[in-house]
Length: 123
Image 1: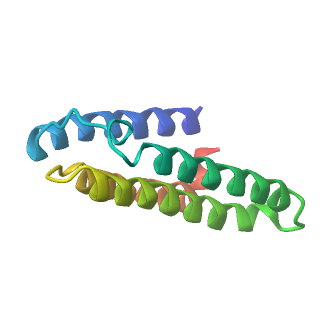
Image 2: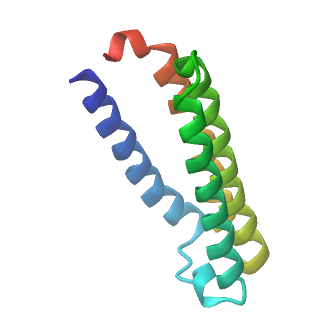
Image 3: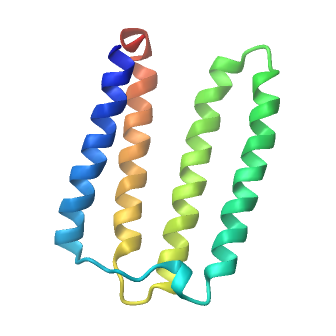
């Protein structure tokens, strides 16, 4: 039950922060899908997803899967948010969406760190 409350809290913080950052940085309605980077974005995300799904099947087979799983999620979050931030910086010129994505990257890593630091209390 504590874990579910933690996840709800994370989503609430992300939602509130998304609204606040939208006001602070300015709302930009453009999307990468509306630019020439559409195909690169789709292929890049798809490739990252396939690679990480393949690695996930290998991590679960490891004898010490719990220890490796934290590193797996850390790298996954960094690459996904990093790729998204790069694509926003590259193809949404004049937009500050990439700054918002980098802030969410830091926040996601912080919550992941809290989750692993206090995992015994959340279960």
